[in-house]
Image (cartoon, rainbow, N blue to C red; front, side, top):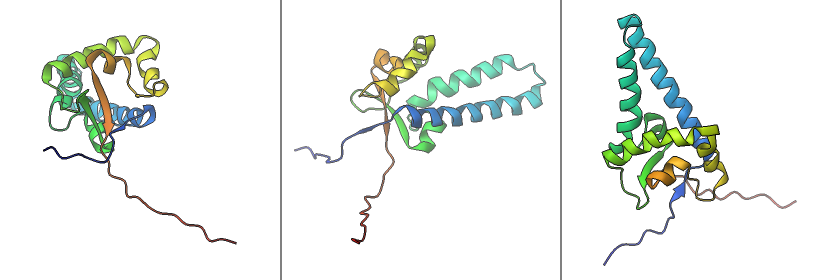
Length: 143
C-alpha cells in the first residue's frame, strides 16, 4: 500500500524564477570572465560550451536545475514530478527559443495558474519549490 503525502506541490512563480535566472546569469558571466583572463578572448567555443552545458545538462542531474534554481530551492521536474532525462532537458533548453519571442513564454509563468511557461508546456515540465517553510502562528494582543 502506498504512502500518501499530505503537502501539495508548490509551483514556482515568475519572480522567484527570475531571481534564480539572475543568479545563474551572474555565475555564468563570472565563469566567462575568469576564462577570458586565461584565454585572452580566444575562448569563444569554450564560452558557448559552458552556457550549453550549464543550461542543458544541469536540469537532468541530481541538482534538478541550474545552480541558481538549486540555491533558491527550486527544482525542474516532469509532469509526474520526476527528474528530467537528458533528452528532455536538452529539448527544454532549445524550447526557450520559442519562449524568447516577445518574452511571451516567460510572461505566461506569471499569468497562468499552473505557473508554466511555453518551454514548460512544450516539454511537459514544471518548476517546483522544495523549500521547507516553518508554520508560524502569529497572534496579536487584543486592545
